[in-house]
Image 1 (cartoon, rainbow, N blue to C red):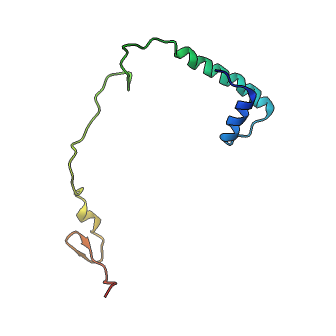
Image 2 (image 1 turned 60 degrees about the horizontal axis):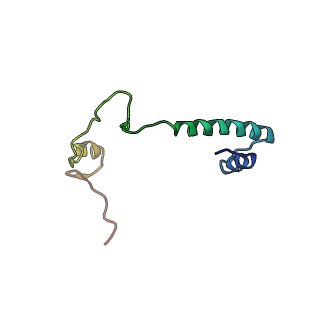
Length: 95
C-alpha cells in the first residue's frame, strides 16, 4: 500500500492540520516509509507465539469483589448542619 499526495492532504484535512504542498510532499514519503515498515512486519511468522502484556511475566493484582459502604459515611456527614444517623436532614419542600 502506498499513499499519494491527495491522500496525505485528505488525511491532514480530516485531522484538521494545515499543511503546505512542500510539507505534504515530505509527509508522503514519511508515511510511505512507515507503511512499508508495517507491511514488512506482516511477513514475520508469529505462529505459536503467545500474546504478551509485559516484557516480564507478572500477575495482575486483584481485589475482592465485595459491596461495601466505603466506611466513610461518618466522615461524609460530619460537617452537615443536621443529620440523622448517616443521612443529611433537609427542610421539607413539599407539603
